[in-house]
Structures are given as C-alpha cells and as structure tokens.
Image 1 (cartoon, rainbow, N blue to C red):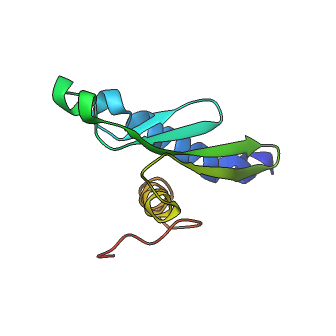
Image 2 (spheres, one colour):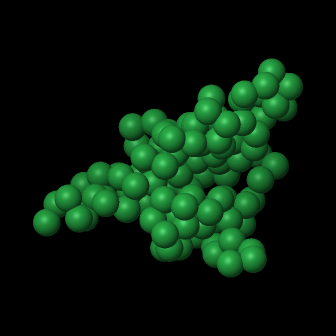
Length: 103
C-alpha cells in the first residue's frame, strides 16, 4: 500500500516542520530536503550564530533517504547523529542514523 511505503519520510517531514528553526527547533524542511541547523532562530543572537550542519535529501518514488550532505566544518558522523535523533523522535525508532547516546 502506497500510504505505508511513504510513512517514514512523511513522519520525518512532519516532525521537522513542527520543530522548525523559527519555532525553536533545528530543522528547515523543504519539499524533498530537511536542512539541519546548529541553533534555533527564536532569538537574534542564536539566529546570527546558527549555521547549517547539513541536509538530508529524499526521493518520493520509491520513498527513500537519497543523500546526506555535510556542510563545511561538520562530518558525516555529525549528520548520522542528527538523523538518529530525528528518526527516534519522528518514528519511535532509529532506521538509518546513529542511536543517540543515553538511549
């Protein structure tokens, strides 16, 4: 069933939208990408210091995490940790990312 196939990416995007940088989160979700930011944008000081850690790119047919891009100064390990936190919050389990410490 197509709805079930799209469920994990949809859940990640719903969580990212709900935890947008403008709402105190660390995400900026687009149509097929989720940008991960270092700080929220609720205060001018944190917005000024915030930088993108990287981006998760998705494709929808078939639904899949397509690419992970790290921004300068960050590593794949940084992004895999962020992906693990996002998956755990949105899905209730870690599918592709690293399991967050303390779990």
